[in-house]
Image (cartoon, rainbow, N blue to C red; front, side):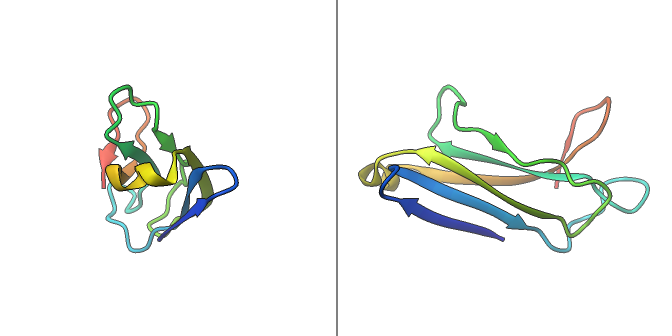
Length: 97
């Protein structure tokens, strides 16, 4: 679950990452170590990337985090918010959930 709102005083898009439910188990222990990545695209320099904290051993993580993207209100129609969920793995590449 995410929330979106525009803060007119700060001229920013506020993205709230609230929680996920019923994620796939990506680890041998039957759980995942999920985190969420967001990008505001197009983003040639990947400066818009934000990541939540990793929540260990859960399929129903509660994040309750907010990110603010500095953007003019008129420019919102030219952008797409990409939200992906990943499983954190130590010593190897992370898995897309």
